[in-house]
Length: 83
Image (cartoon, rainbow, N blue to C red; front, side, top):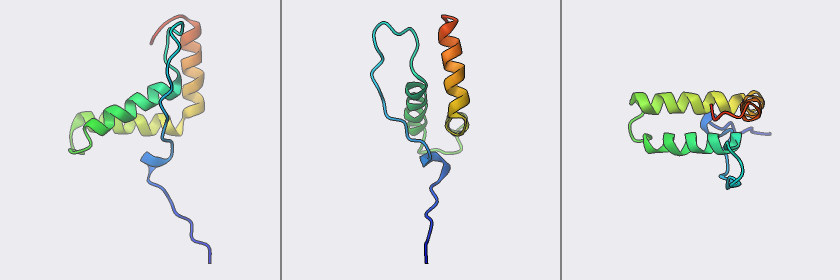
């Protein structure tokens, strides 16, 4: 019988850090997500902390919506902003 192992949401998309080219004004979507993951891990010891909760849910939402986030970052970069 086949058994399917389900991963917790935090492991669905684990970004890898990629160096940002010097001429690029904005980080890639993957770099932004990697930074959120890194920041979230800093607060991992207290999962009731509001900072952890904000970072955790932001990370999960963006992970689930990567295509929309890539589109958003691309549009923001085209506008020349770092928003």
